[in-house]
Length: 76
Image (cartoon, rainbow, N blue to C red; front, side):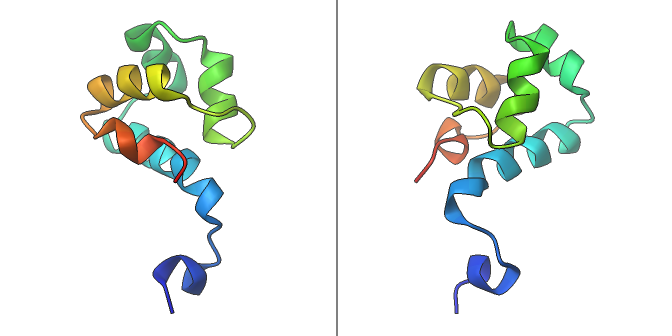
């Protein structure tokens, strides 16, 4: 059994979970991340809640600031 199945995590939710986790790991608020990336705070909230796709361009911006591979933030 895959770990995602064991935890009941839908593969579509992984980018949102990864984004939230990376932001917390860096000790940033959504507003601080918004200021560092130039993305609206509302968009970051929506991406973290799976209500907005992250997209390649945003994944690159977020990945640079959060020090993660941008591919981690994209849907599989």
